[in-house]
Length: 346
Image (cartoon, rainbow, N blue to C red; front, side, top):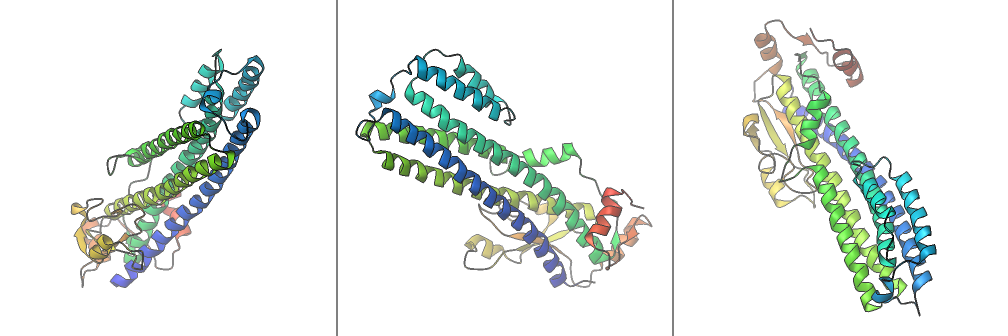
């Protein structure tokens, strides 16, 4: 029988792998935020360059209609936006671009907001697609690795459910803490656009200089970047925890889990209080006794077996011959090829 230290080490390896994948996405999204911010800054700089008097723009001037030449130029910009947005997640942005294109009266301020919104829409669409891909891969990888470690640790495996597209979508779209990941992304986008519009309106009303207006936008985009990173970390932790739980159930042997907190100076008080506590799978409650307990939670769980219990023997006894042996020397790639890709079971 493997020691609880063995199971803890294996669990930590799996969770560390998923944390690294989330960190990599966070870095990519940070670069995307920087790129979007630079584009927005150029739009604002061009706006000031065209309409500012003494480095200031009044709200009255900002609300003036585009003249014929400016409107034609703006519609050419919308055509470019439409080409870039053709693969946006739900098609709504493309539809709105088309609606604006056929308007005959557009103010300078509205044109600037459309330019800014385009960058935010592209940024949000990239975030949604990247995070969706991460969550899908994290779920599948964690589920299979959890099963592999349990089977290799016990030496015996049983048939388990394969992950199909419908089952995966059900898990990804399931609400937790009152919402699902896609709703949180769209909510963050709506909040960002609303606050950018408010900030620009106030800047023009106050007669802020270009430098001050840019700094205001930079600050709000920085908040958006922090929100995106927090969402990536929390949602990936949640989906990894759900995949681990499903792996426990599919193993046919895990009946209890032990809460495992990452203990360092950043560990929350609630996670510290839960560390090493043991719960039956049937009592799992996300946010109460199963991670994540809060945003940016790094806690995980480990399969727990009572002292003297040999789960391998129990599998062999309960399965009545419907099991297969998994040697300790088998690596994950070999196991995955044989029992996941190959579909071999009994």
